[in-house]
Each structure stands twice: as C-alpha cells, then as structure tokens.
Length: 290
Length: 290
Image (tube, rainbow over all chains, first blue to last red):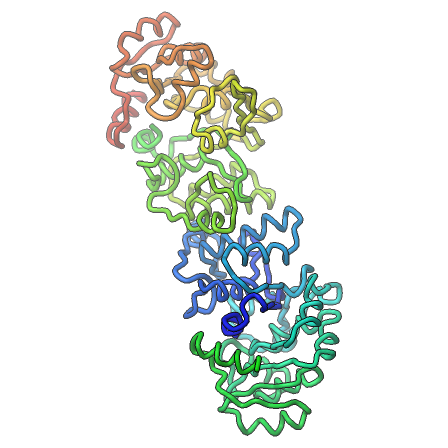
C-alpha cells in the first residue's frame, strides 16, 4: 500500500509505523515493522519472503549458530547492519525517529518514515495456556501457533507519539489506515496518547480492510480477530475504526459487507484491494487519494 | 607455527595470545590475534589474506557503509558473528578467556587458546609527528605508514595474566616463542606481571626468529625494530629475549647471525623457518620439540 502511495505522492507521504514488535536480538535493536517499511519503500525488500532485504546473506546468523547460540530469529547480514547502525546510534543517545529518518535517507526513500514512538512499547502475547510471550517469540519462534487470550502493549501508558506523529496526522490532506493487522500493527498506534483524537478530528481518514473473503492475506489477523471474539470480516475491522474512519475500503470479494459498514456511518468503496504488484497498489493509492 | 605444533601435539598445545590489538568496532569486541589464531587452528583462516575466515562475506560492513558509517576496519560476516558472540558474553559478565575457550571448542580446535589477560590492555602507537593512535588505526587505517616513536600498552600495569597463563608456562614441557612481532605481539605478553619471571625459570624455552634475511615475512616488525633503535635482524630479536630463551632458531638465510646469538648465551638452531604451508610448519614443530 505504501509503495503505491509513494509512487503517487512521493515525498508528500509520511508513514507512521508500529514499533510494538521491536525487540533486542543478538545485542541489536530490531525494529521489524519500521525496517520492512523502509526496505519496501527503498525498493530492496525481499517481496517474496515478506521480510528482510532481497538477496541478503545470512552468515552472521550462521556463525552465531555454529557457536552454539539459539538463532530462531533469522536476520540477514545487510538487515543486521541496519539494526547495528540503529543500536549504535541509540546507545549514543539518538532518538529512534531521528535514526529512522537517517536510514531512509541513506537508502534513498523519498517518503518520511516515522516510528510511532521514541519510547519503548513491547507487544506481549498472553496465550490461552497462560504464558506471556514476547511478540517475536509468538510470531517467529512459535509461528503464531498458540491460542491467544490477550494482546498487551507494555509501556504504552508512558509512551508518547514520536515528534511529528500528531502533526503529520493533523496537517495531512488525507490519512490512510493501511490494510495492516488491526490488533497488532494498528492498535498500538491508536493507543498512543492523542492519536485517536487527532484521527477523530480529521475529516478525511480512509481505511483499507486487511481482511478479504474472511481471511487475512498475510499473518494471523483473521485468527486474532476470532480469538478476540470478533468475526474475521471486513466489517469487524470497520467496527474497530468506526469512531474515526470516514471511508472504509473493502475488496470486491466482500461486496455483501458494504451495507453493514455503511450502517456504522462510514462511506464504503468496493474495489480490488489485493495488491499483487506495485501497479495494483498504485492504482489503489490513486483511488484512495481521489 | 601453531598449526604445525597442533599437528604434532594436538590438545597438548596451549597458545597464549596477545590481546593488545583488541578494540571495539561497530559495537562489538574485536580480538584480532585471538581470532586469527583460532581460525588457523580450526582450519578456516583466510590464509592468503592473513585475517578472517576463508570465503567469508562482507555484507554487514557493506550495509553499514551504505548507511554512511566509516568502515575502514573490514570484518567478514562470520568473523562478525564471532565478535558478536564474544561481546554478548562479555556484557553478561563472562571472562574473555572462558569465551575464547568456548569459541575454539565450538569450532573444533583441539589446542587450548588463552588470551594473555582478561583485563583490558590497549596497544597505542605514538607517532614521530606526535599523534597517539589506537593500534588498529595505525595498523589498518593508516597501513603502518606513520613513523613510530613509541609503543605503549595502556592498562598493562593493572592487567593480570589470564587464569592458566602462568600455570601453562610453568607446567609445559617446552615453551615456544612463535615468530611473531616481538614489539607488538610478544612484548605485551612479556610485560604482564609474572610472565617473564616464569619464562626465566623455565629450562626449555625456544624462540623462532620472525626476521629472515633482515626483513619481516609479514607486518611491520622490521620497520618497528629499526624505529626502536635496533637492527632488523634475527640477533636483534634474540637480544630482546636473551634473559629467558634457551634455544634461538634462525633461518638458513641468517647463518651468519648464529655466532652473535650464541655469544648471548643461547643455543642456536639454523634451519628452514619460512612456513609456506602446514607441512613445513609441522616439520619445524617437530624440530623444536625434539
């Protein structure tokens, strides 16, 4: 979605990105959502795999594994360099948002990329069998297998939106809530002090459903929606955003959901939302911005 | 030399290794001498280059460079993994000697590898033009170009030999001082409290000259000897060891030096010392141990 938006509006785009998935691995600060957004917008993402850099090697991980370390969290060597660069700068006292900006500039990304907060927020997954897992343990190590009882954002009550986040929302002509996981990737951003209010005050907030035909195209959004007592449907996602979204975009496969969403007071666009490549996302971006 | 010795006596070999070259690069603790010894003994050293691991990739460094970092100190990705492993363990409070032992075991090295000290010693180079350089700045960044006025081992007065160093010397049947740089690689070990005394008390200390035909086969030993007011000769090296070495080994090319060294009270062996491959070093090792 962001690739399409960047194609259309270039450096007028600001991406506000979840940092709840951030963690420390192999002594470096890993910021998976910020990095994958950066790599996509730099045109170097491993699109097939969905994380990391295309053609990256994995020698650091292989070396650590040979030395007896647990290496269930894979990280390419170039990707590692990004994390190491960030870690050095964080240790020197720089803010995550400033470092992120530096990285995207060095990688030639026109859009501004804003981590949601410079404060530490950590997504924790409480499982039905009573364990509390760090997000990456749930997501990578246990491959989303455990039944989820609760999702917690540790530190969220003391976290402020990063400088520029509220301002970007308030000054933007249009806000697009990307078809990202509503419970894992959008919820932490909305939970930050002032964000939801800024979105409510904004007259042009468009959201794209991450659920198509009752399933998430990627990741565990459908299962998590069900685990939270909701349907795995576009309208269930719409109901989570109905206090601030003006236009909700659903896929052609979900035409029958339109009435339900309209009944929540939102305008609905029914269109092709499955972004198989950059040209589809560009077309969708133009539609959202029209 | 160590490869040859390990071939002959296997796990009876203990290598005591300089740590004055250690430094922090890219947020990891780099221990160049310890690592290259480990890699040689594991059979994975990049023999042509003289540092790092054969076939290693350099993607982390390339990534850091793309992000705008100075990367004059090259470090392969597998090599980086070694340093990262060490750094994590050091941060967790482990001793360098314990970590080094763990690394060599994981890499299948039969010999024991002992860093000279678990305390921090840093080799500094004072140049003729009045600058004080960290060793790697002198060695790698400035490629040994500056004229050297003085070599300092910062921290040496508070550094103790690592556990096992004095014991290894005292209990060993024979001590071999390898043909390493006497001013940079051997001197810091000798400067540690108790080491020189233990060597003096040992009846069978053999040293191999690192100078052949007036030149160092590798590195700046010849230039540093001259800068320190000595000749670049086997006998000049012998004179630095004459209080503790019993047998001094010089190359066939330096036969005319034998009398000078014998006059210092040492026995002399004249033999082929240029170790073009493992079989030559094995032959030399057998000769030293005979």
